[in-house]
Amino acid sequence: MTEPVRRPARSSPFGLERDPSRIVGFSDAVIAIAVTLLILEIRPPDSRHLFHGLVTLWPSYLAYVVTFMLIGQVWANHHVMFDQIRTVDRTVLFLNTVLLMDIAFLPFAAAVLSRAFRDGEGQRVAVVLHGLTFELAAILFNAIWEYARRHPRLLVTTLDAAGARAISRRFRLALTWIATGTLLGALLPPLGVVVIAAFIPFYWLPIRGEIDRRWPRREGGGRP
View 1 (cartoon, rainbow, N blue to C red):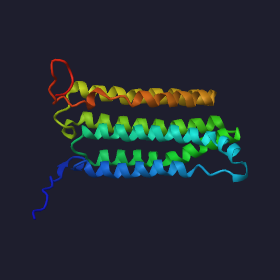
View 2 (view 1 turned 90 degrees about the vertical axis):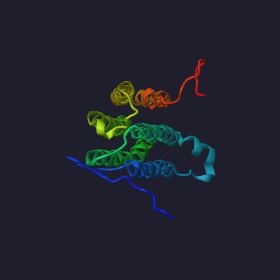
View 3 (view 1 turned 135 degrees about the vertical axis):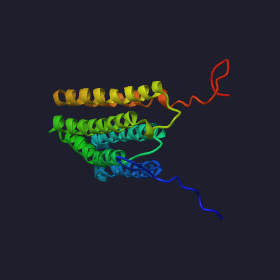
View 4 (view 1 turned 90 degrees about the horizontal axis):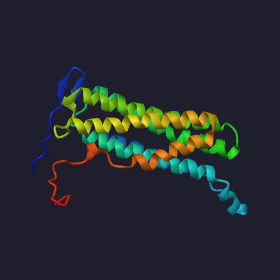
């Protein structure tokens, strides 16, 4: 039985360049742990007043759903990004590590958000903390992608300039959208949460750059 052939690491001014499969696998594991920790922050209420207790936990449900779906977006678009990156160097490894550190912080930010709305105090600070945590993730996404774009050796050869720009536009939009929600949350906390939550359905839309152009189209459109 022959062993699988591994592509050797290639040297660059920023250290050895490696296949990104391990960085993607490690990132998937960290993200999976982060979304799992979210539910652990929701404590069962007193069974003597169960219905009322379940209703009063609505801030926890809200923080859970919004944060889970936003982390899900991080996961999906992380794959979109690394589908276009064929090799990584130490700069990408470092930036991705900081991104994962930020993601691992999100269960705490969600717990702070839910408690603030449940207690009716500190809501502005909680929304700003939650928003800034996602804003940092957006900054790091843009940093990784723009670094890769400026070093074409890291990208797959099938990605054209239009596709790269489409991905950049989507990632830059996250910066503005989340920052706007965070600033509004400092003034009107519920509005800030609504604006950030409104980002969820839009960001799940496919990006032009992730569409595989190698599939020929029929006259009527669609894949064969």
